[in-house]
Image (cartoon, rainbow, N blue to C red; front, side, top):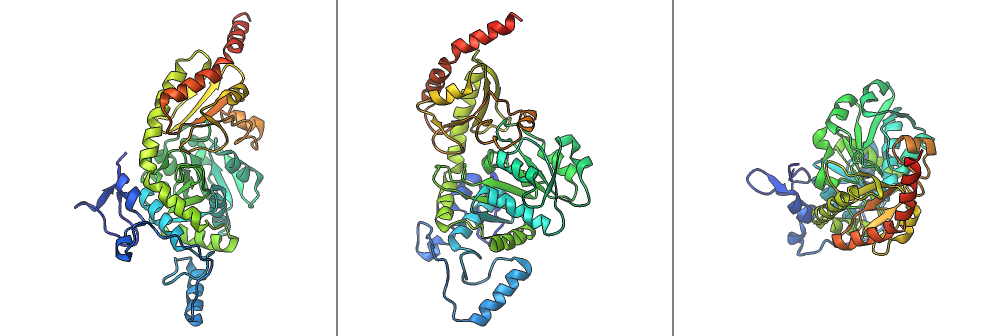
Length: 405
């Protein structure tokens, strides 16, 4: 993947004669280019919920303009639900990293996905074509039709045939949660035709892939994960073109799913180290995947071609015993933190998905999902060895039983 990105927003200067800057440079500087002129080094944190404005006629005109087209307000802020300067810096930076015109931040990844569904549904385009697996709550939101949407589940080869006149969105996740299955994004985008393709890029991050370069129009992140990176901030964001961003801003204003300024501040800070964190954790994950694949206690290892810090593996024994047996690794839901996390998707992240649908998407009851952090690889492997060791006898017995059948 080309590690350089186009400078696309707000007229900030780009780097080098080609007008392109390396991803690592963008991660550090995007959204901060005006700080020197302001006499600041660290980005300011603006916690205001409202802003004084003596020109009420002018403010009314700006609100009318926002209501008409959802464009970002020109001039000083008005109210926290319309926008916040600190959050805007994070949006600018994330759009730069994903190579899109705009980005719109929300209180969580699910709030971000909900806004997309509401924005498309408001145009009468309530039908969604989606490929499993998706994150469990994304699957549930689509299947339950909680926002008035209707979903057709298909495999990538069936996308074009599943499209209807009222299809407003095609959604895929690649690498997918939790099996790390990948799809050919360029082929999927071609099959979508004029229908916007939304790619959940939470696992890969723009460090490993930028879906818009392969034809996607919307890129979804649970910013809680790698973008924040420290397990202490919750947020979501959609990177997209400005036309779609305007609709999302209107939905965000109407529904109130705004990102708190402190979260925006922490997410902007998290982006600065994103390339370093993802690459370091990915190297450890690849090594752990290699060792797990050679271990007789493991049935199958899932590790994506694009790489990354996520590993999924199925075991012969009891996955719950492994969860209970780790000591260095944290047994917890979520992912993308500096510490390594392990969880049992069938019990937690994908519990809300119907069991038959869950298994049909490859989420078996013996599957464990490992989010590799920044610890030493040898310490992590020693911890897995201990946790798996309690299952070795059980695994041997099961293999003997199977051989005797």
